[in-house]
Every structure is written in C-alpha cells, then in structure tokens.
Image (cartoon, rainbow, N blue to C red; front, top):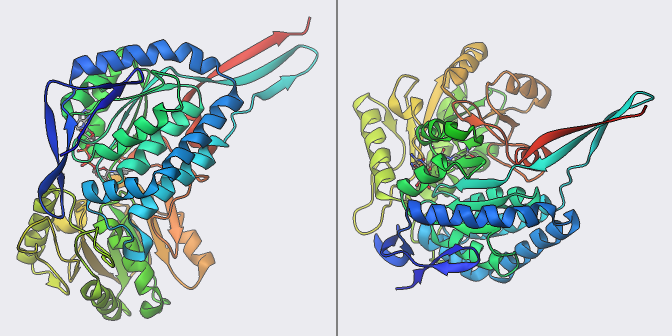
Length: 474
Ligand code: NAD
C-alpha cells in the first residue's frame, strides 16, 4: 500500500508512524498518510516564515504565472487525481448531474486559473493639493489552512491559491479522512514553487490545534464544522489571527405554488443529493407549498428510487457511499428519530447491508421544524420535505436557524422570487437553483455558518491587510 509523505520546506518528510486512509466504498484501507504532530507544524511554520520575505516581494506577474502553472500541473495529472478523490471520498468519477471527481478536479483547475487572474489594485482615495492617499493590500504572512473531507482537493485549492496569489506562504492540514489528494496537490505545486512557500502536515485534530494556536501563523482559513470553527477561534485568539471560517449550513429551499413539480424535480433533487448531501451548501430543508406538496414529494421519491448508488469507480454510479462510518451513524440516527416522530418515508431510509458505508437516497415527508432531521445538518443522502401554506410564516421558519449559509426560492415569477430570496438570512441566495457557486462571486456564511467570504476579489482581500499611505504635497 502506498505511503504518502508530508512536504515541508520543499522536502518530503516522514513521521515515526502512519495512519490508514479508508476507501468508504469498501471500508478497506488503500493508502497511508504520515501521522504528523505539533513538532512537524513547528518545522512547517519555520519554513513558511523563512520563505515569506522573498515570496511576498516576488513580482505580481510572477506569482500570477506560477498560479496558472499549478493549475496546469493539476490538469496534467487529472486522471490520477480523479481516481484518488474517488477512492478517499467515495464520490463517483462522473456523478449525479455531473457532480463527482471530474467536477472536483476540473473545478479546482478552473478556480486556480480564475484566482490567478485576480488583481489587488492600489486604490487612490484622495489626490489634491494637500496630500495623496493610497490604500495598499499587503499579504498577512503565514496562513494556516485546515480542510474537511467532503471536497478535499477543491477546498485545498480554494484556500491555497488566493493565499499564495496575495503573497502569503501556507501550511495546510487536510482532513485525516481524506489527506491524499491534498498531499499530491502540494507535491505538484512544489515542483514549481520556491521551497517553504507551500507546506503540508498530515495528521489528526492535534495538528489542527497546533496550527490554530501557533504564534508564527498570522491567519487561519478553515472549512469544516461549526463546533470546530468555534474551537479554532478560541485557540487563534493568542496572537489575534485573522480568520476566515466556512462552517456548517442547514440551507432551506422554498418552493412556491406556481411551480410545476415535474419541471424542477431533477434540478431540485440534484441540489439536495449531489455528493450524497455532503456539501456545505446542499439544500437540506425543503419547504413546499401545500397545493403541490404531494406531487413534489412523489417526483423526488421517484428520482431517489431511480438513482444508481454504488462504488464511485464503477461506470454509471450517480451516488457513492457516505464518506465515513461516523457520518453514516449520524444519518441513521436522524432517520430513526424522524421515524419515531411519525414521518413518512417515501424512499430509502436504511443503510445498505454489506461492505462500505452506503445509505439509500431518502426522501422524508410529513415532518416539520422541531424534529432533528429538520433542525440539524444531516450531511448525508436524506431530505426532509416540509409542507407550508403561508409565505411569511415559511420565511420565518427558514430563518429560524443558527445557520445562515445559503437559501433558495423556486418559482416561475423571478421578480417575486428574488424579493423573497433577499428576505432569507444567509450569505448566498439563489432563485431556481441552489448551491451553485463560482470563482468570481463571493461565498460565505452569516450567523453560525461562518465569518468572511471566499472567491473573487472579496475573497482575495481576506488574505491581505490594508496599509494606508499618505504623501503630503507641501
Ligand atoms: P470537522 O470540523 O470535523 O473537521 C475539519 C478539519 O478540522 C479536519 O481537518 C480536522 O482534522 C480539523 N479539526 C478537527 N478538530 C479541530 C480542532 N479542534 N482544531 C483545529 N482543527 C481541527 O469537519 P468535517 O466533518 O471534516 O466537515 C464537515 C463540515 O464541514 C460540515 O458541517 C459542513 O457543512 C462543513 N463545510 C462547510 C463548508 C463551507 O464552505 N461553509 C464547506 C465544506 C464543508
């Protein structure tokens, strides 16, 4: 079984022990990663600090060129990376509505290119007889990146490329459940970057805690659960690290009565179930008007039953397994709780017997707020469909959540839908869509879904501090 090294100061680094990386489709290990520790974090931070001075002064055009070159290296290794993504996450190569490893690697490449081309122009806010005042964007120093298991390569690229583009150096720690694509990404990038600019330390929570606490790190960018985000915020307070936190979501979607359920069912199902519901901005609470409720439920259940679930490496698979056993247990628990509370299961509802962490795509009707499946983020292939009659009341219910990542309104009347969408308390709202993100539009959560945004100019600015330059004229 292949053992993947860490990468510190441009060199492969091996720890005294390794841990297994499991393929969730089989429950069997298929690779090994290094069990890094706080001492490896110290070494990586020292390397990143040493590299920062030269990297932050590297001409902008050269940093841009190198970011495009990293995207090119990912593209040149796309088949290998796709297979690795599928083996460690379980997601299919193709996937439901085209959401799979091909999209993950292709998306990472596209994001890297678009981010490479972003600019941080000097802003002149005064230029008169008294003085000229310019606002400059300066890199922060060393960025610590901590990533989750659901989109490991994509999210690593979302963190690393803007951080480097803005002139910072980076220490990244991938999820211990899915470390291998990140290790390969860092290896490939290191064939192009100066040593120490990008380092990776693999390991468990202790490595993340060491990064959050480290006095030599200036900023943390974290994507993961809200509970971990809060812990990181506490640990990062020691040296007032800057924070971008992309945390959990429990996104609501509201379907208005003017919609034809048959016309939107495929898109709506994809918004809820792509990547097995294991995407932060999947639609996780679906509110449907009572006049079309039964028809909408029946359409979603029909698609759920037709969906091909299996090993992501097999041709034609639309949904793979849940990524890990612990998450599967959460999904099972939420399903059982809904059952106990009298919910109606229209499809699925059970884990599959045999190997791997499979759970049938599950549509649950006759359920409402106050039941765990509605109130908590299931992060799995199970969707509660909730009946409503009054639009003001349903918007209040959608907003009655500690989370505020995304939300959507589905209607033929786009003007009315856009007005309603703006009443949802969340970072992104969609009309007749849900969860679709792109590299030029800011994305982030409000309330307990996070702090700050990623993507586009707004996202790039999060990797900088402002320096104001005032030049007196007299
Ligand atoms: P998690 O919080 O359990 O782990 C994420 C990472 O944090 C892992 O690398 C883990 O090792 C590390 N970690 C764990 N405890 C730590 C600590 N105390 N200090 C520092 N690091 C620590 O999250 P997960 O289960 O991997 O991911 C699923 C969650 O991520 C879901 O809630 C999902 O909604 C959220 N998510 C959010 C976004 C977004 O953009 N908002 C995107 C993807 C996933």
